[in-house]
Each structure stands twice: as structure tokens, then as C-alpha cells.
Length: 392
Image (cartoon, rainbow, N blue to C red; front, top):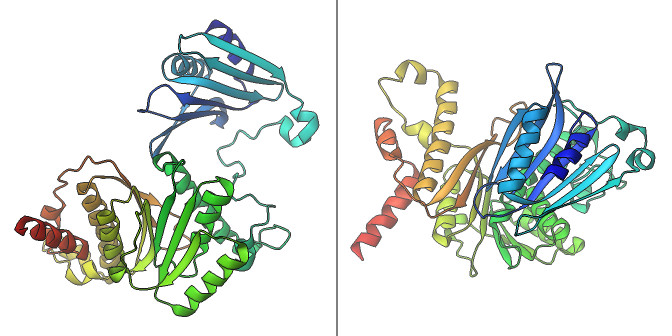
């Protein structure tokens, strides 16, 4: 590792663009680590981002600590390192016997890409690099009015552009869970105008080259007809749209991923139950119009808080999301509750992301809901299924 140490000392400075560690030796733990320089409180640090399963972890280290971390990770966990600075590129490979091969090359990036790349932006607030890049024309974004035909983002629709990319970032995190070598089937319940459905298909099929089909389901006949027409115009053969109710939809082929974005009130519960019954590997859910708990919740202890209608409404919505997340955990899913988009754009900003792990457990959520005098539709559906199972 001594040769690698010497090379890293040359690029681990403010002129570094990034270092990526990949090709992990074990299935457990992080599958990729990125390192980039940042300035924090006037000090040069290195942000280390570890991608582990569906989770992402960040930490900042000074130069000696970052160097020690990289070398330790390469010695124990990873077989490949790729780094690029303003003046030098480096590639390091570790064989199964532990032999380290290091290759370096001078970079002409400063001359090739212009003056802007001479000085990497070290701020935490540097310009965001989106999955759907600005300047690259995407047909459905043009149809939405988010892009011009030249690929420029319409200023008044920039929030929508950010929302779509934020959604795809969440999808990107779970890609290791999906088997890229097999056909992937996704069901999108309550797809509506389907701009995120089109984005998902475009990302997985067009950008990632995956064999994927997506079924979009919604009650509005005119919306479904229009979405089907656009899918045909874009040549998205694996994208189809059906008119139907979530509770009645049965499908017919295995489902790897279920998406339910803004399905109203208890429709989300029926979609989640379907996903669990199908054994979907991944579930994405953004709840909407959560009235059920608001009509039930009652607590003498919380009475001084719940007497304010607005606060009661928001607490009920948060409790609903927490109950759903806990119930999915009890069904064997590793569940996260994430912020979908910034609060200033919409109050409906919670996304539940669940990945099947088989490690089911009792979260004791029923004890909590009993104290609040609440029973959600999803609780009832799971309870009915359990009773039916016990009687058979």
C-alpha cells in the first residue's frame, strides 16, 4: 500500500475532484465510497460518503484521517480505487492475493474543459449535478413544460425539475437491491399525470439499460388515455397505463417494486398491503390526504395540543406515516421515512422507502395506536389477513 499512499498524498488536497472506492470484497457493508474536498469553517476537509444498502452515510475528516481511512478501506474492504485531481488521475487495483497495482496519468482536464475546472468548488452548496442533466432534452420533460425543446429548464418549472431528480436519487440508492440481470416489473398505483412514472422508466430503461416494465394505474380515464398515448409516442414499449382501483387490482406477473405517490387517504394502505402480499422487494410511498387518523385520534394527555385543528391535522398525518412505516417493518422491510422535497414547495413532503430484508419483528406500534384510540386501514388489513391465516 506504500505506493498508493504516496500517490494519494499527491492528489489528496484542494485540487482533488473526487476519489471513488468500489468493487467491495464482501456483500455486507458499503458497496461504494466517494471522497471529495469541502471547506468547512475555513478548514479544508474531505467529505467521505459511504453507500451501504439503501442508506447513505456522510462524515468529514481532515487530510491525515481521510488518508488513513482510504488506505484502511482499500486494505480491508475494496478492490478498486479511482481518483482524479486537477493534474493527476490514479487507478489502483487490489488482487485476491492482496497485490496492489497503481497506475497514474496526467490529466489535460484544465485545458480541455476550460478555466472553471481549474478551481473545484469546495463549498457544501456547490451547484447540484442532477441525474437528468440540464441541457439534455428529455421528451416527457418537454411535454410537462419543464424543459424547452433545446433542453433548457423553464425557470418557473425548476421546482418540478428538482423534485423529479430528487425522486430519482432515492431510486438510485436502491438499485443494488434490484437484479439488473433479470426483468424488473414495477407497479405505480395512483400514477395521475405520471411525470414521475415517465421519469422512473426513462432512468431505469434509457439511462441504466435495465429490462424493466412499469404498469401505471389510476381511476381517471382521460389521464390514463393521455399517458398511454405519450408512452407510444416516446417508444416506451415497457410502459403501460390501466384504468382501475387499487383495492381491486390483481396484476398477473411477479412485482419487484411498488410505487404509490399521493394516493389519497386509505388508498395508500391498500397499495401497501398489495405490495406486501406480492413480496415486492422495494416500496416507495408518498402519502396524501390523510384523514383517517385525524377523525379518530383522542388522548386526554395530548388534549391541550390536539385542540388546535391545524396541529391535530399535521400530527395525525405524521402518526399515519409512522404507523405505516412500523407496520412495514413488522412485515420484514427495512423502512426509512425521508424528506421528499423541501417544505416550502408542499406540506406533503414525506416519502416512505421500504426494502425487503426478511428480518421481521414486533415494533409495538399497536400499543401506541391503542393509547391514541386509533386503528388505521393498514392495521385492519393486516389483522384480517392474520385472522384468516390462523383459521385456515
